[in-house]
Amino acid sequence: MSIDTKIIYPENLYQDASTRCVFAFHGEQPSGEVENLIPGGPSAVKNAGFSDAELWSTRSGWMTFAGTSKFVTASATGTQVTMNGQSLIVTARIKKTIGAHVAATRYLAGSYTPGSNTGGFVIQTTTAGAVGLTVTPVGGSAFSVFAPSGTLTDGTTANEVNLVYVASRDGFGRVGQGGVQVGTSTISGAANANLLGGWDLKIGGQQESFEIKHLAAYQVPLDLAGIPLDLLFDWVDRHPGAVIPDQVFGL
Image 1 (spheres, rainbow, N blue to C red):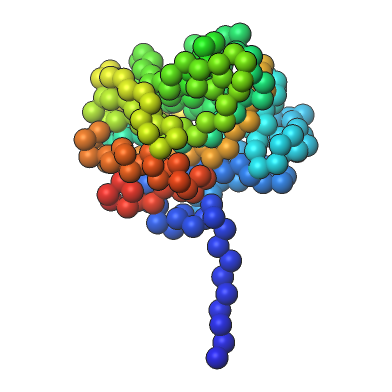
Image 2 (cartoon, rainbow, N blue to C red):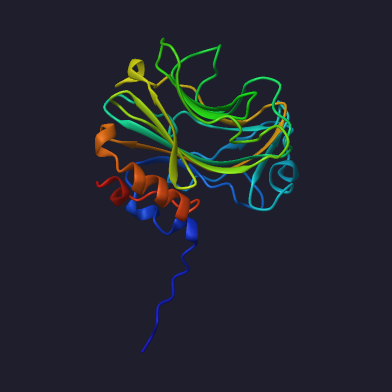
């Protein structure tokens, strides 16, 4: 009797069960451009002069971004998201490499550039160590939901945080960390908003050094009340880096 053997890597365990994931940059490679776990999705390409050693060798299993020229970009085709009829879920695992607070708000990853254009989302950290998701409709104003001050660092000790953001199509923001909800907001101005600004996704490129992995985005056709938040936050905490299957959303 013959036995067929298939190797399944942990990050791919639930991949085939997801039809809602727009992109998933796992960020645990030894080298090369940042691979997208979604078949056919664009890779995130290093900026000119940003070496493999700088991106991958500082800490095993993480992407490291240290400086304004140290970033990767992925084409808008395959990474754009919207809230027009869809709720947006974004996951990321982040660590600041030193404990000191940032000198000003830093944008760690996102699909538009605050102050320069509109239409997309960004993950940002504040001078108090809060970490938030901001969504800005095309031609509109910014709306945010934050994990509390001191989340990323208290000014002395840097933390490694696993975050799940929800920006619901009916205008509510939620954020989970460590399997539980840690932040809420009302973002009614972004309800059913068009976020399709047409900008490439950028990760990194800030003055301070940050480590990032497990950056992914999902679109689900549910209002906030239909999203099982407790299950979602707990599942992401228990399955780091895995693509969230549709069944977690009840779809």
